[in-house]
Amino acid sequence: MEKMKKILLSACRIVLGATFCFSGFMKIVDPWGGAFKLGEYFSAFGIERLSATTLPLAVVLAAVELTLGASLLLGLRKWLIAGATLLFMAFFTLLTLYSAVFEPVGDCGCFGDAVKLTSWQTFAKNLILLPMAWATFRSAPRERKRDAHYVAALLMLGCSIGIFAIRHLPLIDFLPYKVGTDLIEARNNPPQSGETETTLIYRDRSSGRTQEFALSDTTWYDTVRWEYVDTRIVFKERQKSIDASEFNIFTPFDGDLTDSLLFDGRPTTLLCVTELDRIAPRCRRRLARAAAEASENGDNVLCITTTPITASTRLTLDQQSYPCANIDGTLLKTLLRARVGIVRIAHGTIVAKRSCTDI
Image 1: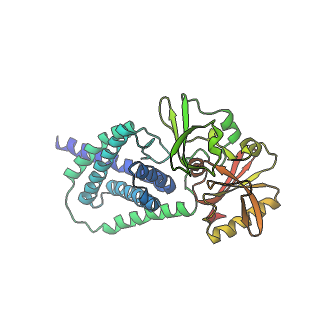
Image 2: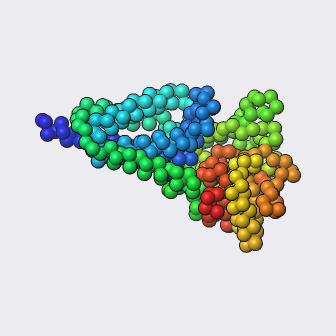
Image 3: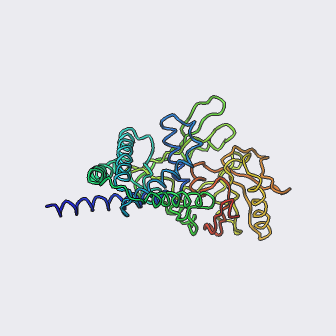
């Protein structure tokens, strides 16, 4: 009987450790995704003032989760690690219960973009893991091993992976716009996972009121008047994030430019700039070099941004100016996990992506 108990406790520790390792790793390789998800939660709870902390907090949370998982598997600081794991599980079980009941966000993001679970599925998962965390904590010895430096090393390793992914791009790209994605094929064959309803939420800059638009309603193209807030995509059977079939670039005066871009015989280099007035000097120089090289190679060079534009808006780089177009905020975050970077499209296929650091 005692042997069976030890086997069950070991199984609980291994399952917990493996789950935490997988979840932490999937998030630490793409900290921008975690930051965007935290931003959704902060917005839902009315604490947008903390939005500046989402990126460092995403790195720390993912690194802590990865460290807890690896420490459980390696048997480091057993009582302390088991206690931290129990607290972690208790907090997120309550959070996912709230998310399942009130649906403040589409999905929890507990496994990053690698595995999508509904809030109820995540809550069910946590209900299974929480008793395991309790059993692991109750059975953990309070021995004082000199292995704290190993735990610290794991935490530093996790943070280093996150910082590397921020400076460059996600180590593993689970997003629908990874290199090699055929955007033409995606637009011609959207996912058949049930009926969908896409709602775009924008704020009227003059009145401050929010308004919802259908994707086919071109009113929101007027980005001088409307400020992007959120995108809500509801599937009949489940909720899902943006997929490659929804790639869309437009201007408030020329309308949809997507087809002309995808079917242009020349490759297109997209200069991705989240905010036109917030480009670091170093990134501006690198963008200028990349844009000049692309132009010399015969590429069509276009700046895409979430900043409202007019007919005269152009991005000026090293005395050369390039036309600008708008892109949905969520789509840009999904296309490129960086505030500034480039995406190159040839014959409708994404052939290269670079963050500012790698240009």
